[in-house]
Amino acid sequence: MQKVFTSRPKYFQRVTYSILSLLLLGTTILYLSSYKWITVFADGKTLSRVTMAKGVGEVLEEIGLELRAEDYVFPSREAKLQRLTSIAVVKAKPYSIVHDGARTEIWSTGEKVADVLLAAGIPWQEQDLIDPAPERAAGQVEVITLIRVSSAFSYEMVTLPYAVTRVANDSLYRGQERLVQAGRDGKKIEVTQIVYHDQRAVGENIVSSRLLLAPQDEIREGGTITSINRGGLKISISRALEVQSTAYCSGVKGSGCPVDERGYSQCTGKATGFTSTGRQAKQGAGTRTNPYLIAVDPRVIPLGTLCYLSFQGGVVVTRHGRIIKDGFALAADTGGAIKGERIDILFDNHWVAWYYGRRTVKVFIVESIIAE
Image (cartoon, rainbow, N blue to C red; front, side, top):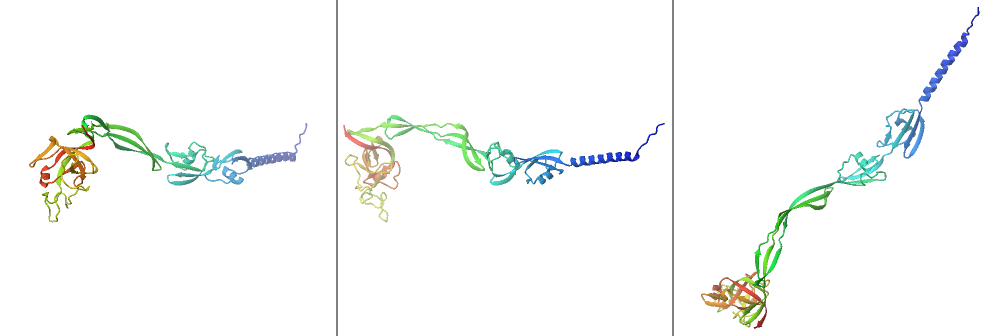
């Protein structure tokens, strides 16, 4: 029979060696597993590091990378590191945003101007003006300006003035007019849009207009007759006027004009016996050489103008009989009450003038006289 011998010391040595080897291997594996191989991409640079740090934030501190709260880190700073980890860091940039009468300073990692505005919590509308434009890259931008654009509408009633149309009438004298059709203004409603930049009006434009009433032209007939024939004379005229006429006297002694306690006559006040142009205040005969004297408004009939008076029926008859007839008159005087298209005819006798009263008379402004 064969005997088998076992060496106990050697057996235990091998077992012990195996256990120690396994422990060493486990320790080595455990030790090596605590290291991480990290790659950091920041500011256009690539940084590599082997670290035993557990988190992203921890390894960034080890590297000495100064970060702001606004900087973008991926994975996040709270994330745990893997055996092989790549970390991307995008540094925030400072921006100044001018808006709503204020200035906001902000750091942002936005790629476009719109991203920066959103990061600042500043809303805007499509019509607002943003410089630079929202879609522009924010890389080279430092100042962003936001102008609030708004508009309001106003409604205005607009008057459309009527036009005046003149047509010739061969039955009227030059200077005479006759109204054929009265003018009437038109009306329309205009809607105007007023544009505001930051509540300051910068422009306006009419966006709609609606006609309510069309204007109606005024139509007037103008006379074309340029001369009259009287007593064998052809009298060229520049114009003819239909005026209101009254009468007065010189107020001197013998005229019969009432005089007050101050010595002022009723017709002329302090009577001098002369007109305002220096002519003797004496009734004329209506002839070319001895015309009637009349007081006028110089703005209507200039002083020194030779006229021809034409009364209804050719004469004026009162209780004193025929006191005046058609004839020449000279604008030689003025009066405080003679304003506009009105004349005052001089008579020698106050009561003749008194009974003349108020009458309409046609006054022709004489340009020239030719004997026929």
